[in-house]
Image (cartoon, rainbow, N blue to C red):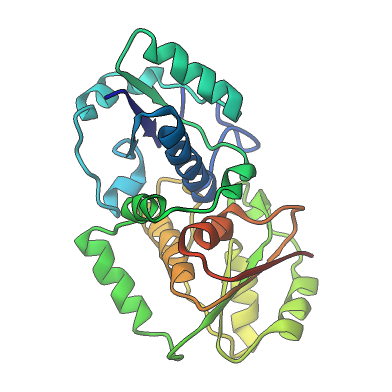
Length: 268
């Protein structure tokens, strides 16, 4: 059967990663897998997600497959393809002469306009399966939550701090949080400084520790904390997400789509 391998790694052959462009977060990556699964159904090919070349392979179950060796051999010649119509054309072109295509794509937010089937949800959840060590880490952290059920209040404050290490004044967002917090909320954010500022003077539950942008950083402890918060979202009864951008954060959008967690998103 024709097979497309969606390869997650940091750098690709047809672009140069900088602090401003050509890096993709876990929300982008999951959206690409979601959209590619639907393409695999309509175009009749098998889809494999391979992250053996990414630090995620240290915490998620990294499954060997029939093209694992090919991915290693061609790791420096795998391209990013975008948007969807180019992905379709590229796959069709490659399949004309080969049974396999290696690529990365994240596709547009419109990928989520197709409601997930049971098969799609199972496929996406299988990608996020923790290995034994990471599962123990997740369980130990979940045991610290003081609520039998919880909601997530999420602040997406931008890549300036997370990627470029430029810390801004978050005072107005602190007041916004205090005006909107509920008793069983857990705070998550892409800004460690924002969470630290909140924790200095307010009794609001959040998990501490460095976080990382999975499209840029390689520190496994930071990435582990980030993916823990992604998995935490999947266990919430609801999500309220506030963002400095004019679109829903891909981080929460992916979990909303895969796990069908109720969500409210608002620009601030």
